[in-house]
Length: 102
Image (cartoon, rainbow, N blue to C red; front, top):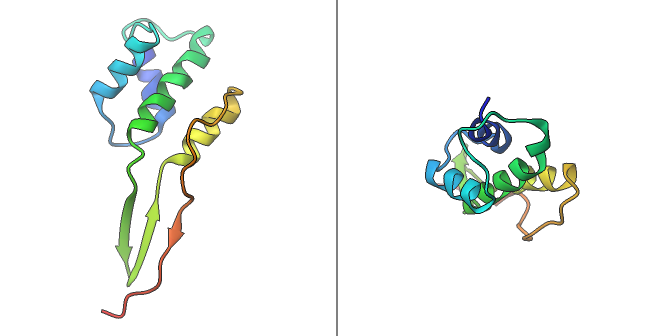
């Protein structure tokens, strides 16, 4: 597994920006094509957090008359906790809005 593949595994999101991953790796002096080793775990996690932060736009789904709003902040929180990093941004938790009659 390469460092880049390790970051993709960490972000756990099916749609991601390849450019965002490459930029995060370059910012942290991580070679995307090098074989991933455990010593890179924290730097890979930080790169994953940078990618996830670039994807923080709030998304929503409407189903059965309910609008469900969510974000990827929980994955960022999990990575922060796992590697002893401080939260960088405060983001809202998922919420369900009132049911639409139409």
